[in-house]
Length: 84
Image 1 (cartoon, rainbow, N blue to C red):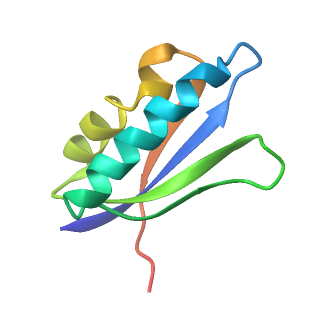
Image 2 (tube, helix red, strand yellow; image 1 turned 120 degrees about the horizontal axis):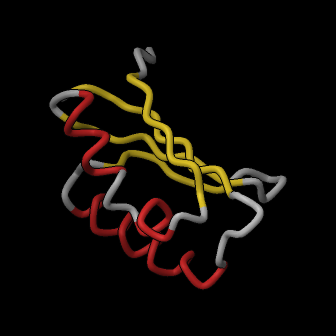
């Protein structure tokens, strides 16, 4: 599996009520062994998570199920990350 960095950036119209659903989504992915690390940015502008997936298309499909993306209140961007 490859590593993907998922950036989740708040838009002005974001709904804070979506955050608990987002956290549950990440917990489910973590239980599946797909999320290695996750967390918010200190300035509250958004956050990121490190996702394991077979390829970029799968990573995008998973990230687009994230309640932050589904709600439309965040910009969700996926990058293949070749971290060492």
